[in-house]
Amino acid sequence: MLKVLKFGGTSVGTLDRIQNVANIIKKIKDEGHDVIAIVSAMSGETNKLLDYAGYYSKTPKLDEIDMLLSSGERVTSALLSIALNEMGYKAMSMSGRQAGIVTDNAHTKARIESIDTTEMKKSIKDGNIIIVAGFQGIAQDTLRVSTLGRGGSDLTAVAIAGAIEADVCEIYTDVDGIYTTDPRIEPKAKKLDKISYDEMLELASLGAKVLQNRSVEMAKKLNVNLVSRSSFTPEVEGTLITKEENIMEKPVVSGIALDKNQIRVGMYGVTDRPGIASAIFTALADANINVDMIVQTRGLDGTTDLDFTIPTTDFEICKKVMEQFKAQAKNIDYNESICKVSIVGVGMKSHTGVASKAFTAMANENINIRIISTSEIKISMIVDEKYAELAVRALHEAYHLDK
Ligand code: ASP
Ligand code: MG
Image (cartoon, rainbow, N blue to C red; front, side, top):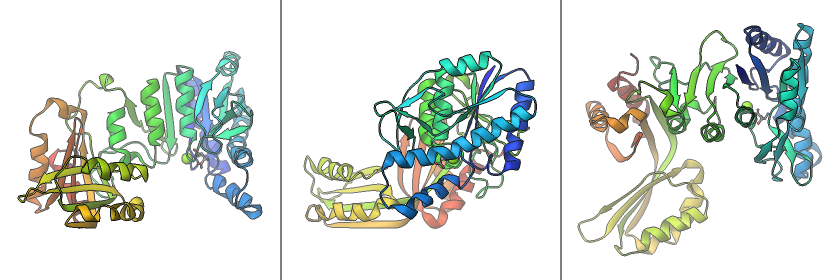
């Protein structure tokens, strides 16, 4: 098999840990696989380099920043291949450019445009283990070094796996996979063997530390089988993130996600006429505010009530935007003490009674549900923040996720 492996900052955080990664790669190579490993900078390194730049300038040129930041990953790739060579393995380090990665010209947040895999293929044929510096490429017009945005090494790995048609892309961090819910909230949470791309995207809060959403989206697009696993317990199989068709037995519910960074905006007694919703949500979109759940109901007096949620980070701008709609409503209020709990599972599509079970679980705990929204594979509920953990545990139990 051709395996693409990616090692994050903590996995290569010290010289010892780089040696540990070399040992993991050795084992996989000994099993007869070809290996392309993508590495992050040692943890803390990228921030340190940014601080260095700040010593001289508050507004350094972006392509100079990229030149600087890309060096963190290069250090790790060189050290890892030195370690592997010393162990008697042929290893070759490559910068993003040498690996054939071409990006657009948006320095510090470049997008990968293409990957020419010729050099990597040749090098593998020669028996090399390839170690690629993650997070970087070369800008197509200026031919300057570019970087892909913070956390971008995952993208490098997924994009290479897609371009070279690797059998798998294993993302190594310090967490051994994706759990049914946050184990700090529910200690009975279980590691999932398999999960679909869409479920993973919906459960983003559970994978936040281990997988960047952008790379899950790219994996889905390029049909790359992703595995989330730990370099600290490499003997533990991780979680496979793959397309739905590859999951034979689809659980009705795969996991429970919690998002505490939500604020509910309520508009009451809104004049009922065409164009109001359009005006409000266009204004919010223009302000780059990410509206999540929207509920509109009809009041008795012919007006309507409108509720929606926004991320906590957008609170201040949202209040400003809403100012202009004051005249259109009897009252506008904000509730910061809410959270969103979601149950996610592809199996929902073909089962009935999934939602009622969630509502019953809330009722049994005397938790009031303020907003409900559903999609094909997700049911989300807004409840008071003080019930967040209780709600997660109750739902985990209701769907027997600990079994
Ligand atoms: N070193 C870069 C960062 O810290 C890229 C990465 O680790 O994925 O954002
Ligand atoms: Mg990282």
